[in-house]
Length: 449
Image (cartoon, rainbow, N blue to C red):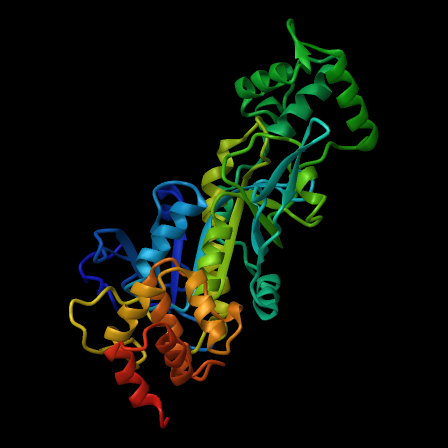
């Protein structure tokens, strides 16, 4: 990995690829297919955050630039805050995320990758008590990539099995458990079987899991519960017990929650309101909300490392993180023609001068006016009320927390031909501040435009 060339902190990049944790980020740096020399370049950005930059070849011959980093902690708030701090100073066209998630048992296999075609926060809403029972009413605010992005997700495949695919564990713990239970059902000691090492390489862990599930008891015999389970399985699969399916890429809804869940009923609950949900994690909806506010795509790929219950198989974590990064970067390489034609204008920090400044697109921003608006209409609700009085619709104002960022966005939209023009907006402001010289100055300037 090359570290000799310094990263230019404010230079535009096509994609900001964010991971929650460092081990997920490390797997991103393992992606080499299509990478252009000198490869990943490690450095720090202007805030001191460790980042890695690389360019990848694409089908249309135009390289795509990717900057990767990690948030350090799980959770949508942390991920959103880190991404926001970066795009405040670095123009980007797309936000992306790879890493791990819990998958829906029976619908996906450990190690599979899920592209999020719908993203939402499943524990957001209202809780109330009715007749002594708590009822939770979900707020199903969804974020989703465009139809053409979804189509590209559905087309992603690895034509030839790459070398990293061999890192996927060959047998799940569940497969090994089933083999042991079948041996016991047939009255044989698993340890004496000629294929013992091949069929149950994780013997000690398997014994512990079977005891926790109360499917066996000491000495090594089946419990009634274990016997019922394996008899039913052998009835359904008389010739050979099922083995893990081949690696697959799924395109499906991914739910975001505020905490790690060990709940085998979580997916049945979620499927009541989102029947095709396949993944659960802790960050995606926050990143998608930020991308929507900036009107750029959010592309999420998560690898299945467990099924969201207490019987986790941590052996798949590394592979799941690697597979998600490989699939995500392949998608981006195949789809760079779908990226916005212009870089997202970075947020400009509060200026010490009151003079005009330039956005990355070359547009002049009147900072004295913007700072006045930010001081007097600092909240999104205030800005939307003013926008409405000027003749616009409330949803035309984005939900941006920093007042200066909010008003830079609004003013840019006014000058680019939004429903409310600069002169109309200034007239609405003048009604509140009839003697303000800054407003009067810009009203004169825009009166005849």
